[in-house]
Image 1 (cartoon, rainbow, N blue to C red):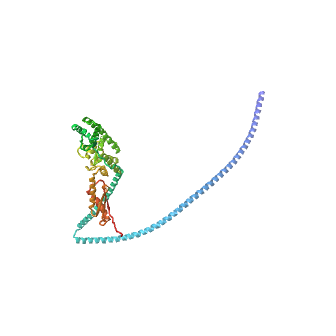
Image 2 (cartoon, rainbow, N blue to C red):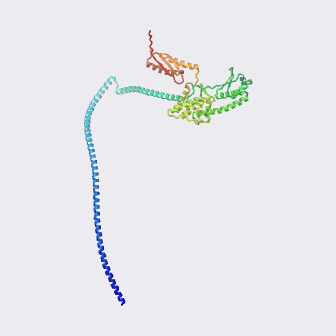
Length: 516
């Protein structure tokens, strides 16, 4: 029974709960529907507001785009206007050019017509000239009785002779101009080389005499029965000359080095006082060794001064020997150094190898150091000596050919020949006796006096210039210029002289009156 009541209670309780839940859910559903409607309404309002904002923004953007488009359109319109203006100007210019071309075409047509007319006229005249020439040729042939071939050959020979004469004159003109230009250029190069070289004006002289303190020393030098002097001459290979000259003994020898050894040895013996054969041999041996060292030192110093430090050692003593060798009173070693410098300067001016020219000039007279020991001239001896040490061909040819013994094979040989002549003929390089000097000046004055119209001639500046005074009544200005040229040519042909001689012809008219 209780169970039943429990079941009924549960049943009615569940029904009550269900009824409560039903009414509660309905109420909640209505409230939810009401809230949903409110949300929808709010969303609709927001959507309308947002749509209006987007539409407004779109309108504003469209307005900006429209304004920018109008601006771009205006720019393009202005550019188009400018292009149209330029095109109009070009069309105007083209129209003017077309008008000008039209005028020129008309003018060209007129010129073509005139040219055609002139060509026609010229053709008629050519025909007339040809006929006249034909008639003239026939007339000439009838007169001369020559065939056309003979007349043509005669004409060709005459033209050939005339052309040969004209061509010879033209060739002679250009050859003369080239020679004058080359001579002037060579003179300038040589003068520049001479001016750039400063050398001593006086020439050295090798003294081969020994001064004695008194004449009694001569007897000691001679020795008992001449044994001392014989020993000395045998040891040195020289001749000792003892004459009546007070206080002097002369040493004579063709070898300058042996002569110098003898001179130094004799001076030491005189200073030492012990003169006897054993002492003589000892002194000569010592001096000979010292001389060998001295020759090497002199050669080395000269090579360094000439800027040629790479010479073979065997050449150095030969250069030292040149220091004791003279030619017409001129020291050969110093002469070689002068030639080296002059050749270097001239080679540099001509665009040649200056160092090679200096080497060839420095060694060109090396044969003079040994020409007293070998047969033949010093050019050939020097060339054969230098050939042993593999010297360049330019150096060998310069040594052999600087006196014209062989033909030059390199451009350096003529340079060495010129430099050698300059060094030998410059003022003060070589001694000249007073008699020869006076004779040379006298010959120069006499030669100038042989020309017609010359009244007086004076040699001045040691014979390097001659002043010629001519008669103004017999010669005019042009004749005076010709006289100067003729005298210079005559001097070149007839006289021997160092360097060059300046010829100055003086012509003046003096009018003298006396007021009383």
